[in-house]
Length: 298
Image (cartoon, rainbow, N blue to C red; front, side, top):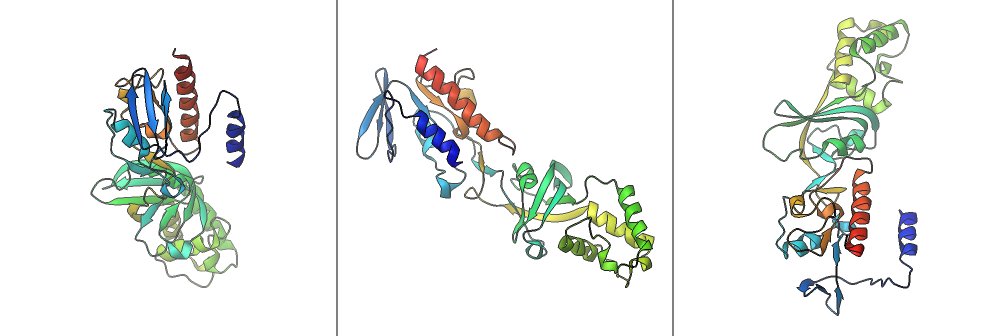
């Protein structure tokens, strides 16, 4: 991140560019063929104005309402703002004991038993619930409606159920302690939790496990349900879902249809992408488009 900032900062070191830091915009007024942009101390005039204030996510890092408020002042409408690419909260008491444990996982989010979203990737347990890239991917609009929200976790997504059962049955031939049934397949702490939640009475050795018991363990590892009680707030979210209505801007230039000369880019608009750099790509691409066309007037 520091390298990216340095590259952008060096690119601004040109004689025709004036860089004002600590200039918090309080008000923008349309004036003739341009705009007066006012801070608490001074005002500047510009012919074209690009609103690139970002969204409300990450308030501790600078996320704010400023861009939305500025554009509302010119008649633009804003959809409901909500967090996305964010952690999930759960009432399951085992989360704290698994804090820090990571697992490759297939996650399904169910709303009243119906599939809401699903994805594959890395999951991380926290003391309050679930985090990690795969959770960010399925967090959009989770817990935004009433009803029962559930996360169904498959901790061995690359293994079909029959293959997993066969592998676990093969382990009966060893002299291992029965608690080691999932050793090597899952993180040690996670494996013991799966065994416990499968509800079986563990015998001393693997050889004494019954086929029925092994099937129950395999099912628990592949269909691990957790109640989802909510999501973390915008202060911890990576992205804001919602924003200024995109129909009020030209798609080919990002110029306002309501107030020509004003452009909007990035997260201030009602656009958000999946986890994986797509929101950054939108910020860069939209910024380049607005900057280029705003400068040339094409």
